Length: 161
Image 1 (tube, rainbow, N blue to C red):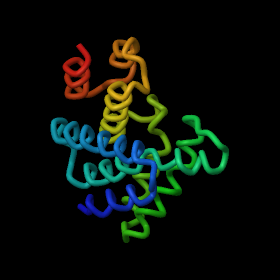
Image 2: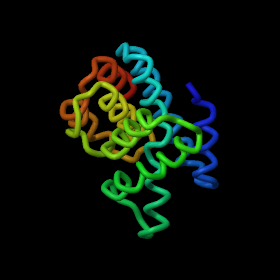
Image 3: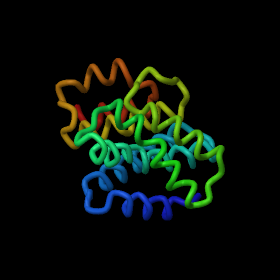
């Protein structure tokens, strides 16, 4: 895995957008824990972690292009930006393609039942709840509608009783 290089490139990409880099690092940490607890495979975990680090690259691009960003714009603009970073680091098309898939759908909870996708989605929800980007009053609805992994459910219930 080349996590350190992707972290460096993600931080460089966001520049003075420290809050986005910090958010990505938190999502990465939860994704890593959930992947381990759910026994996700090695290569799948590697790609998942790259996607977790780069999942919000679309925010920067959308803000530059449109002056704002909504979920659709993030999902549209993020995959090409992430692909450029991963390509520059010499990642293969198999890694880039799957990372693009995950990033392009990370705000679309019903897009996939694949474990790597569920872990990314749940990790992002945990961080968004913790950061106040989603109201805590929604935690029960989010748990029931969007969490599939037992580890994710346990973390959500423990962090937000």
